Amino acid sequence: QVHLVESGGGSVQAGGSLRLSCVVSGYSYSGYCMGWFRQVPGKEREREAVAGIDSGGNTNYADSVKGRFIISWDAAKNTLYLQMNSLKPEDTAMYYCAADRVAACPKRLWVGQYYAMDYWGKGTLVTISS
Image (tube, rainbow, N blue to C red; front, side):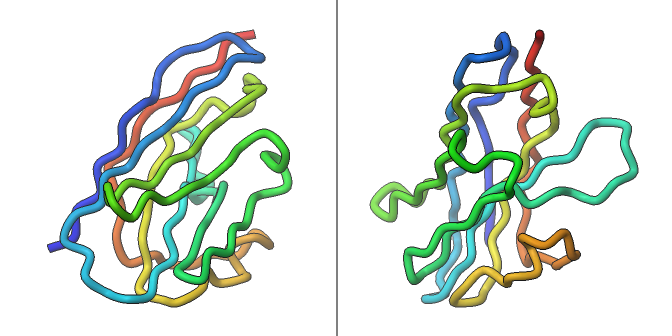
């Protein structure tokens, strides 16, 4: 079974930084799209794709976080990271990591279209105060 466990969330002031981690276990497929998604608590809107990295080493970011967030994958530790800098109040959300058994992250993730990732973590809450 594939398990994803996020950590690193918390409360910081605007302009601060946080690093999220996601430990992935049980994933034995050669191809992957690993990503971070977020959803504002209490909102019905679908989870927004924030950043993704695939087995080809390609990275993608939502326009709202480009230049501020960095996604990385440490294969030795089976851990996905999201370095978040210059945080804004609008970054406040529950952040989820997810994995999909494809060799490249689908482009539809970055144009606001829905895509059903195969595996999800339970999330970690990030709160940014102004």
